[in-house]
Length: 591
Image (cartoon, rainbow, N blue to C red):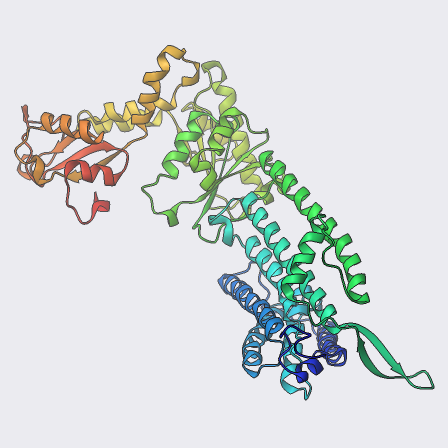
């Protein structure tokens, strides 16, 4: 066949000889023989040794790094095959790159066997097979006198899928996307890799053509020859054929030219349609599972901790839970120090809890698990054994005649949780102060219990040192005590404004030069009007005791501000407060 007949895709006649069944089959024989040898050796090692060194329960950062590196290297191998399908001639430089990549695959699979004591069960996996396969076919390229440019490195597309799923199970992607988005990403990657795999197999079958066995007079096979190879095909053409076929569009403008490709197309259609249908069903089922709380929590490797919250506040999704999460996951804290939060309840999420889960905080940091602290399987889904702490929160919004039952339920949940996981620190929020004695009777340390009445003594002590501060704290704390949803609609506007202001925090800052010589009240009015920040108090000079004086009253007189005065402000975040007071502090976190 002349060069014009092949549209310039085959650069030389020698390249035709490289794409022969004899060389490809010899390559495959080497690969499968090497994998069989690995299986035999690990089977013998497992049978004759009883040592169990280097076994680990959890994968570490080295495993994560190797898995990510494997994804990159495998993707590079896939691009190498694409390049070879265009060049269609054996290149020493490309083989050198393949040798480097296969060296990593060899190190990865040897380490995988080594850390598991060369266990046969680890050797007999797809991960090991594809690593051994890649190393073997590249070794054939290096040492064989008859190398071929048609090296099936596209097989690494399956390794990309395997490594991606491993990384997903390690929780690497949990900080970037939710469970549904991760699963959707996995389905998209599966579609891309499987489609690429099918297209590459079809390309190879078209280039190689059908097999003709040469036999002698005695019926013995003496050689292999090719019949009807299709050198005009391209990888893009085969990719187009696969997508059109599996999408059931089927234009019919491209059809397999060889018998082997037709047989493979039958297998591809049956398996491909079933595969993609199952992927869609799996995503829908996962979404329903997560919405109902039947999913599983996977800890993100970027989180320093994760905590479990259960109790009446979780079941009802009351303001108690919302405010607790707002404080725990406040944006002023470094993102690396924010924990993952697992909410656990025996009941399906109600309106209040769904509001929490669909909020910005809920989507970023919160996972809901429907289950009971009495069920080990439910605790395993919440990864409770590795949790850093558990909070059992009573619902502070219940009516007075239900407070006793709410405390009993809180104590019961905490007791069951301690019985299942004795080493897990547990903290309780109770409604009545004398419920601590009930908790002591149930075997719970009273020091682990907090009641709403405990803060009364703290406010009394603070009143001695800082007049006016208890009023502020009482106002901020009182939003925990009632269920504002029961108020009439006519009162809701000021309630929304109240909640908005109460979500602000108190920050310290130094007054800038713009307010030097301005009376406290005048500065407070200007700052509130321009920046929506409340100026609360100013600190008196050291010679006057260095006290925090609310409303700017020092010694009975209204204070006149000076540059550098320390003031306390109520604002949305520290940056807004510093901008409002004109502060030039280089270390705002110190305040």
